[in-house]
Amino acid sequence: MKNVGLRLKEQREEVGFTLEEMSAKTKITIPQLRALEEGDLNFFKEDISYVPYFVRFYAQALYLDYETLRVEVDNAIKDLHHTQKLKVVAQNRATKENIENRIKDKKMVNNSTVLRPAGKRKVDYSLLSLLVFIILLLITLIGIFFVYVYPMINESNTNNNNNTTIIGLPENPNDVDNKPNEDDVDIPFVSTLEVTKVSAQEYDLTGYVDNEEVLITVTFVRDVWMKVYIDGVATENPKSKIYKKDEVMEIRLLAKDELDVMLHFGNLKGNIVSINGEEIGWDASIANWLRGIKISFRFKGV
Image (cartoon, rainbow, N blue to C red):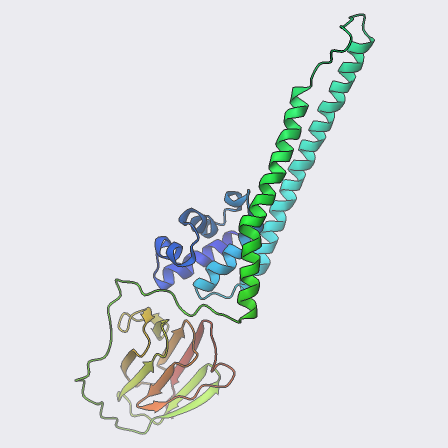
C-alpha cells in the first residue's frame, strides 16, 4: 500500500494540486487523503471496507488507471484483514479462557463450606459488559455499512452503467491564461513538412529544413490538463496546467534531427493537434480516449 500512496502523491504533485484542492474536488477529507498517500491503512481500521472506493475515486480524479493499483490495494487489505482476524482469535481465546476460569472458580465456591443465602446469586458484571460491547459494536458496523458503504456501492454501479469518466479537475486560480495573441504574425513555413504515423501514439516528421521554425498547435474542445516535454524535459512555456474549452496552445521550435516532442493529455477525445497548419488525424484506437495518454512526434532527417 506504500507504493500505491506514493504513486497517488507523485501524480497529484505532477498535475500541480494541493491536498486542500483535491479534498474540495473529491469530497474526501484532507486527513483521509493524507492517509491514502502515506499508505496508512491503520487510519481506516474502523472503516477499512471502503478504502478501495476511496483509492478508485482519488485515482480517477488524478487521471490514473485504478486497474494498475487494484492488485496491491486488494493484497494490502487482505493482509490487514488477516492480521485483524488473528487478533480476534487471540481475544476470543483469552475470553474463553477467562470464562472457563470463572466457571472453575464458581464450582470451587459451590463445593466449599461457605453457605450463601438462598435465592441470591453473584452477578458477573465483566461478562455482561463484554456482551453489551459486542452488541454495540455490531450495531455500529451495521450503521456504518448503510450510511457510508452501501450508498458508495450504488453510486459506483450507477457510474459504471452510465460509462461516466472524470474529464478534468477545476482550474487552478493561480494558472495564467496562455491564449495566443491574435496579433501574432504567421510563421513563414520554408518546407512541406510530412507527418508519418509509426504507431497510434508515435509520429515521424520529415521533409523539413534544418533550423526551420515549426508550429505545433493544440485546440481544446473541453477543459483538460496537459503537459509538454521537449527531449524528455517538461517545458515551462507552454506550462503544465488545465486548458479551457476553445483555448489554443502553441509550441514554436526549430526543427533538428532526433528532436522529440511529447504531448501528455489528461484525455484525448476531440482535441485537435495541427503541425504547420495541417491537422493530425488520430488513429481510431485512441480517437475517443478518455484517460491519460502520451503522443510523441520525432524529427527524422532524410
